Amino acid sequence: MAKPMNYDKWKKIEVSDDEDDIHPNIDTPSLFRWRHQARIERREQRLEEQREHETKGKELVERRKTFNAKLKKLEDGGGDVSTLKGEKESLEKEERQWKEKDEEIKKTERLRPLDVDDLTHEGKSKTSINKKAVEERPKNMTEEEQAEYYKQFVEKHKANIKKYGMFRHYDDTQKFLEEHFELVCEETANYLVIWCIDLEMEEKHNLMEHVSHQTMIMQFILELSKSLKVDPRQCVRPFFTRMKTADEQYKQGFVDELQAFRERVQKRAKQKVEDALKQYEEVERQKRLGPGGLDPMEVMESLPKELQECFESRDVAQLQDVLAKMPRDEAAHHLDRCIKSGLWVPNAKDAEGDGDVETKSEEEENQDKVTQDIEKLQVE
Image: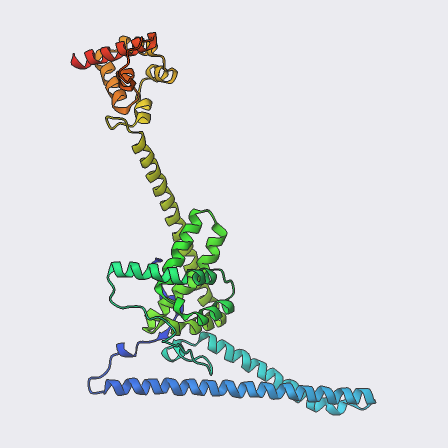
């Protein structure tokens, strides 16, 4: 799972009522209620101003339509349009003032700190969760129970998790999560992280970057819920509202976290590929081990070049000649390792035989002689 994010990117979040220094003579529960009521009143005042502003905008639209109709009628009838000059200037002035006010409201809303009450309200709407329709995650599970729960969760929701991972736009993603609240949880985030690593290991870099964006959305929602100590499903709408209306600092914070996550995925995928390759090589090495537990490839590479040529050409006579020219201890050392690695099998014909008496070829006699020489070297 991705490392904890620096939530300073979200700027101020008003959740510190219970951490403020409060005079001991003040009734703390009452103070919390007063603060909560004050937030509600500020919010209602803000919404009322927005409603009045929207109403004013609609009125101006209607007045503009009426004015344009009057102007057209005068122009078509050859009337004096100058009679509408005063009305035109007044209307244009009000329209300019309305646009300035609209920009001011939008800017204020973008910069406004997210408070606790925003988690269940957005404008006139409220995030409603049907708890009966959403399976609650068991609490206080052991590691084994968590692993089993994750396995069952993925089996049940894998198709929808992958569908979520393929969305591109915020509106589509928000709509899908609000239709599938059961996906807003740690298990989904964990699966998405693993999926990203698998895609990177398969060298599907573009797809990994796409899914990683959706992974980071889920991570941000979960981190927001932890910070505010609420159900993560209550943070879906506030998160998307914030991302769609946020200033560049908010958006850049998300981009920075996303890039850091992708780098961690790439690093982890590279490590897993290296580990898998090492594991494969070790398995193959174990398969190659000779009767004495040595790797024939490693032994072969460690032999003097003239001995390597003997084994590569399978020339027993040449092997015998090379050994004879070597110091006795060195020859014994190399041949002992060849036997333990399986490069040289003493009395190979006897081991393969079924008891029948056969005439030995010259090569087989040479092999027997080399074996006898080895035994002598080992004894001596």
